Amino acid sequence: MATQSVLFDGYRKILVATDFSPPSEAALRQAAWVARQGQAKLVLAHVLPSMRQAVLAASREARKDLFYGSGELFQHEVRQESEARLRQNIEPLRQGGVDVSCEVLIGTPFLEITYAVQKEGYDLVMTGTRGLGAFEQLFVGSTAQRLIRKCPAAVWVVKSEHADPPKVVLAATDLSEVSRKAVWQGYWVAQQAQAEFHLLHVIDAQDVPEGALDNIPPGGSLVERIEAEARKRFDEFVASLGIGSDRLHTHLEWGTPWEEIRTLARQRQVDLIALGTVGRSGIRGVLLGNTAEKVLNACDCSLLTVKPDDFVSPIDPPFWPLHPESTPAAP
Image (tube, rainbow, N blue to C red; front, top):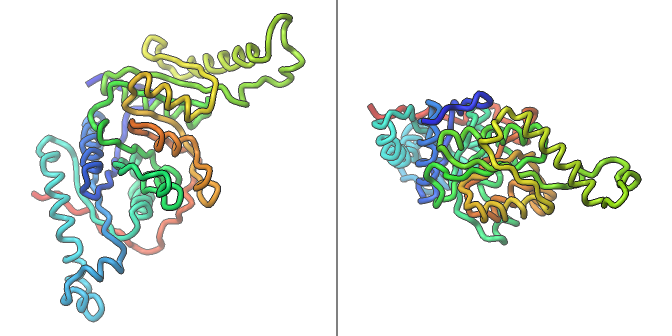
């Protein structure tokens, strides 16, 4: 295993969401690799349908038990099949030395996953994605998109064709503190995989120096002035990371951030993109999205998103125990 970064030394508790689909299987395979690198605890979770759907799917005896009995038979029946499939998935990982358990939740997937993070303190959530079409993304949204917006943990969305240890990692920065966190986490992943590591900054309005129009040198141009200022700030940011310059490839580009990220990812055949994000909710978030969501939709590679230290999820944790204890791994 490659030497760990002193700036970020790995994840400690990883939650993997599964619906037993091929994308979920890819996410579990990637998560097992990540867990091995940092000796992390791994929990595989399946979210059952809403209570109403679970009731409709239950047997007559289980429904009677729910309404007129203790409810134990109902709980056992709706969880039994999922628990069996979860144990089947985690057994090979246990035999391979991964500290892994499983859990069954009931409700809306992104809500239950967020509740679990709030309760158990997971520092990474990993999930596969089905790649919804543009119309569905606009009006429905995916579990992955909602987790990017609202889950307080880092979220790693795994694309099926990039489920193996990455060979090329790209981190994008706007020079903010949250992007610094994303760079460190992306760099840690690259170290573990012995992958190429690229760092991109896209020039935008914050790189325009105050009074730029009044201080253009003779024979110079505004574009040159802005680019020089951007290069200076980018170089200072890179120097502050504590990463040797021989270990990363830097890129400074003009344009729209998500488009430049997509372009560089295609050129370099990137497997994983890491970037900071600020969650959005409501109509503005749905219609405009943010850079992370646009990258998720536009790029074929996996995406690791990191929240600011002061991020507060708009989802309030429940006031009653909705979540069962983790199902212990089969002896």
